[in-house]
Amino acid sequence: MTEATLAVTSPDEILTLFGARDQHLRTIRRLFDVSITHRQGQIRVTGEPEAVQQTTRVLEKLRHLSRRKGTISPLDVQAAAAEEGVSGDGESYHPNAVADVDIRQAKRKVHPRTEGQARYVEMIRQHDLTIAIGPAGTGKTFLAVATAIEALKAGQVRRIVLVRPAVEAGENLGFLPGDLRAKLNPYLRPLLDSLNDMVDFDQVRSLMEQEVIEVVPLAYMRGRTLNDAFIILDEAQNATVAQMKMFLTRMGQGSKMVVSGDTTQLDLPNGVTSGLADAVRRLEKIDSVAIVRLEKTDIVRHRLVQRIVEAYEQQDG
Image (cartoon, rainbow, N blue to C red; front, side):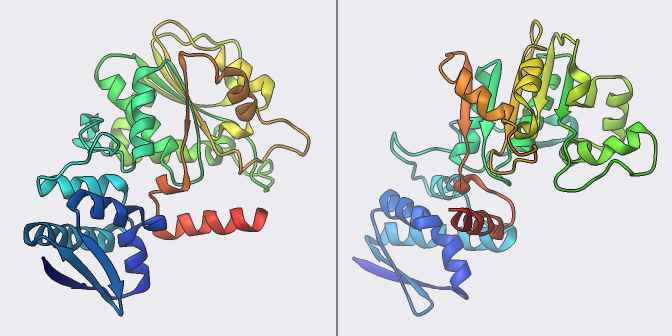
């Protein structure tokens, strides 16, 4: 048996390194069969010499990663362990289990960063209709848009249609200056932001001019039938039951739909039922419909976002 130590600078660094409810710590202990303890600013690793060396290298990599991006996902832990030649058992997620989302138009790939995100991408690929529910920051919109671009590149669809309800989040935008397009821009901006994160602005504009990519309010979907299209409904919790039924029945031949939202961020008037919650209840027993529930552990924004979500949940509870 041998022992090694690793100095840490702050309690926040320990929390990020060990993960929520010590999930990363438990994974590393199990994969390398070592003992890991923390006391007075030092992480102590005890076990067989080779395992201790491997674990120390993994912890160092994860510490540098946490300082760079502010968070660590279960996939990051699995990837660091895999670099040491150690992979998980059948219950553990290996980063190669789901391929990256290839969006070569922008010469980059999008990596699902948690098990939930990887499952979400796989469900989108395997099903014509996927419904995703989860808190802010879990990548619901970003990964759906990335998968849509991947499908467009592969020739699986001919166009992408991005849809959002024009519902105000506690603010009255009706008197904004400008024409209709200018008034709608604040509602549709988040979808455009996701696009511009992956595809050059000039290319997005060109694709929109050619109507290969379309960004529209939900109300403008009535009466349409979309064939060979990848259709994404964002912020679906703000669609009414009637709007959701209208949207879902727009699917044509060769099309794929993703519906995503957060049922805790409802901006509909009091007493109005969310079409997202209603759709899950009605459709969850249909085999060809995938229902994906993302959790707080799938949040990949700034490390404070997960704590903010938890604080609001505790207060609401």
